Length: 531
Picture (cartoon, rainbow, N blue to C red):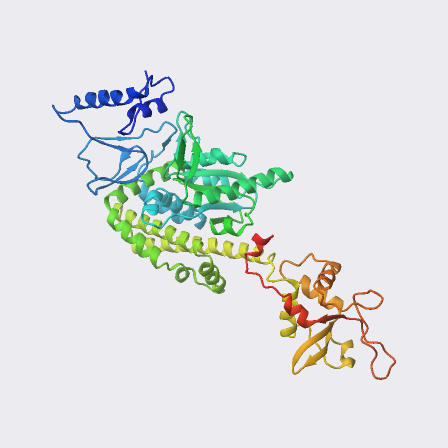
């Protein structure tokens, strides 16, 4: 015997065949007969002459019924005080159970957040946010990022992830997180896990450095691919056993633990950083049962305050005030990053929304003094500040490796800004880096620059740190701006000073007009794609 739960479609026969391998439709023409028989049987279960109608709720999420009513499902139950007037069935879950066996979870949560390091509050808030991910998508404010827990070895990255996101326990194995995957997992297995567990957080653990290049490269590739998959709203497709195409939405969140930071611009903008630069000590109250219990409370609050939550969502995301809350000395670089990379700001605004909703839920459950509320806000914005600061540092590292332009562009900029302190008298060339050799009506036509000074200048530019002297001069020869000496050397003599006793230092004689014709400025962060 086997029990099937099927949607009430117009072709139940095919649905049965697809779900039950032993079932075979002997003739195509039998399909309508099967349909009629099942409908007739259903009609007998209700009142005489009526077919009993109901709704099927496929797991965690918020659903809008035909009459406009919103129903929130969490952990196998209808959350809040919602009463359904029609029979309903919630899709059974045979993979995990959400552990929530704890007394007084809300006051415990408040005390725990204040007693622990600020690094704790972002993962907790992210768990709240992901539990409502389907609502974000429906309201056109999709989540575009995953949590990236990075730090030095033995700093407690995995412990933090397990204690916060381990509330989904594997059935039959208490204490074993059901949605925790190792970094050696395949992309397909992670993709399936993300699509099959709505509202939960999937942990990708231990993106660690390795002495084997291929292993570390696989980990980096997997981390980047999973971040993009978890952040993109587009669904993935997969052929099922019957040959049909299944469309799989990414309905879960993702948390990665790593010893390194992914070095792609795309991955950075999709990362919500929690960086541990020292050993993280968590109190005993930080455990999966606490998070599971407060998520139950949050689901109830959200179901009963749906309109208020949606109002807050649009209010915060349409006018984000992230900068106002994290402005400190040197925050100009923060402003530049958040204005340029809007995805980062959008993700932080969604986190802020989840945090505000969490605080309102707490206020509804317990008496929350003003000083405690303010302390929670300070803790949250301290964590956001640390997250954005890590973003700024990583973008600065990338920028130091990205070229602002080709060598011709850099030299033109240097000449225009008098970076080389060019002289116009031959006698001064001994003390200067170069000389303006030809000039017409104030326009520099030809310059002579000492090779050591030019090479040093190029090597000091982003992306050119490892360029050799030969590579630089070969480029100048290739574009035709370098005057070659008769002996085929790259540098030339410009003669002697007036006393005729001393020869002028050798220089690279460069045609500035040719240099300008070949100058090309790169869009910052686009050079990464170029290479």
